[in-house]
Every structure is written in structure tokens, then in C-alpha cells.
Length: 254
Length: 92
Ligand SMILES: Cc1cc2nc3c(=O)[nH]c(=O)nc-3n(C[C@H](O)[C@H](O)[C@H](O)COP(=O)(O)OP(=O)(O)OC[C@H]3O[C@@H](n4cnc5c(N)ncnc54)[C@H](O)[C@@H]3O)c2cc1C
Ligand SMILES: [Zn+2]
Image (cartoon, rainbow over all chains, first blue to last red):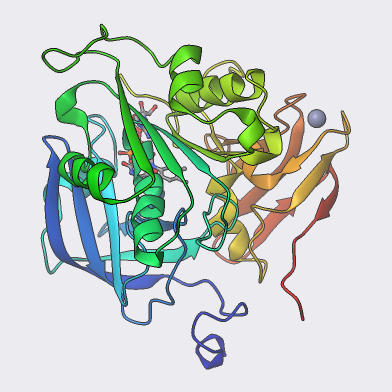
């Protein structure tokens, strides 16, 4: 019954798919991109995520959500996972899983925290740590779709070596017309950086974002406490709360 | 449960579990809170996963809006704190 529906149709029942790890890209010393091959993948929109399910031999199973890092690309589904040292799932995904291994995944899911390439409104992306992942899918999709929507990214990271996609973002900031990329370092800044390490502030959002009058679509993603702070800043600066979309990844561990 | 910790996510986490039950995405559905009358998308609800199942609370007044428990042969969806849900639907 489920399989009889047109691929990607709205009535496709959400089921678990076998996903085979095809490729691994090291992003930082503690994060990597896992590219899975998922037969029958129906495609997805930038900002959507998947649920990953791991099942132990004794039948115990657990699941977590991971954002999709790239625009739709056939049967390929790329996730970037940050290792949380005392975590249950992320150490397995970042250290144990090797190409050829199979896990279970369902999706794509989420239709609200999504950017649509047909939307001409300016976009403000604010990422904390691994919250960059769904926002990167939007940046990549923008170029792929030939969108002229103006994009600004403010990316808050602990140290320069914690940046995901650093080389690609540097190239895109140069070549993707209408994309600005700015960083805030919270623990250690690169040599010669004009500011001391500090939390993202009102001034960063005010200077690195768009004025509320431009009515930008704002996407904020990262650890829960980060997202709460940034959403409050945006609303205090006069952004319409309905244009501020948020996705909270959970507590910041240790 | 400490309501002031950051040990929660949001309604985006409900996308998969609710998509198991509904044929359309529910994260963009706009819910109205029974307790304070506040309105907002399901994606904006505060979601606690430590309880049995998933508990979604109102971001304005912190009261429980919905609970979802998935067992091996049933899903139990308790909507007592939600007065209504306005669900975006694609054209027929
Ligand atoms: C919609 C959604 C999308 C997500 N997308 C991504 C993604 O693209 N990439 C990614 O790396 N993660 C993402 N996450 C977070 C991911 O789902 C897990 O929470 C994370 O990998 C930790 O899981 P774990 O099993 O390793 O840790 P757990 O065993 O769940 O937790 C172990 C310890 O770490 C703390 N902790 C829990 N979650 C986090 C966290 N996110 N960061 C730091 N500490 C944490 C806990 O408080 C606990 O002390 C997303 C979460 C959501 C809700
Ligand atoms: Zn309320």
C-alpha cells in the first residue's frame, strides 16, 4: 500500500529506510560528514532533517534527529555529525561507523524550518556550532537554484578549528554573488582577529544581519540556549517573530 | 523537571513522530494553547524527551500542550492542552 503511492507523494507512509554509508568527509577533529546511499529516497528541501535509528543486538533501539547538509541529490543523503563525548549516538556515528555499514533512517521530515528557492526575500542565517548544518543546505541550494535572494550568515563557533565547511564557505563568500559570511568566536579567535573571543551579541546581529525593515526571513539553529538568546535578540531588534524560524538541537553538553 | 534548564528541543523534533500518524507535515501547524490562548507553530513548542514519550509545552506559559507516547503497537496522542490546530494543507 505505502509503496504503491507515487514516490515522494504526500500519502507515502513514513517508514524506516536502510541507509548504507557510502562516503565520509572529516570536517573538524570532532565532526564528520556521512554520505548515505538511500534507495527510493524521495528528495528533500533545504532545512529538513531525518531521524536516525540504531538498534543493538539485544533489540534495544534509540533514535536521534540529524539535519540534511546538502540539497537533494538522487539517492544521496549527507549528514554532518558533531561528536558529543559522553553521547550515546554521536560517538558511534563519528567514530565507529565505516563505509558499507547500514543504519536505519526515516525522512525527510520537517516542513516549517525550510527555505524555498522561489522565495525572493533576503535571508539571515544564524548558526551556533553544528546548527550550521541545515543552514549550509540552504546556502548550497541557493547557488544550485540560481536564486538571487540576498543571504547573510553569522556563524558562532568556539574556535577556528571547530568551523564546519570552512574552505567551502570561504570560496562561496567570494563566488556566490550576494552571500555574506561572518564569524563570531566564543573561546579562541584566529590570529589577528579584531575581537576577543565572546558570545554573540546584539551588536553582532545588528551589524551582521539585515535591518527589520527589509523583512528578512531569519533562520536560527544551534544549541537550545543559543537559539533562545538569538531569537530574543532578533525580536528585540524589531524582527517580526513570525519571520524568525528556529531549530533547537538540545542542551550544550559539558 | 527544571523548566529553566536548556534540556529541551522544540517541535521540529516532533516532525518524524507526528509524520508517522498524519499524512502531512505538522511542524507548521498553528496550535492554540488552552491555558493562555497563545498561538504558534508546533515547531516552536518546547519539547521534553526525558519523560515517557515526548511532552510539548507552551513557549509562553510552559503548560503542557501535547504528549505523544509511541508503544510497540499503539501511539497515544494526548492533546488536552491544545485548543485547536490549524494545519496548512496543499491544494486538493
Ligand atoms: C531537529 C534536530 C536536528 C539536529 N541536527 C543535528 C546535526 O545536523 N548535527 C548534529 O551533530 N546534531 C544534530 N542534532 C542533535 C542530535 O540529534 C543529538 O542530540 C546529538 O547528536 C547528541 O546525541 P548523543 O546521542 O550523542 O548524545 P546523548 O546521549 O543524547 O546526550 C549525551 C550528553 O550530551 C548532552 N547533549 C545532548 N544533545 C546535545 C547536543 N546537540 N550538543 C551537545 N550536547 C548535547 C546531553 O545533555 C547529555 O549530557 C539535531 C537535533 C535536532 C532536534
Ligand atoms: Zn500557553
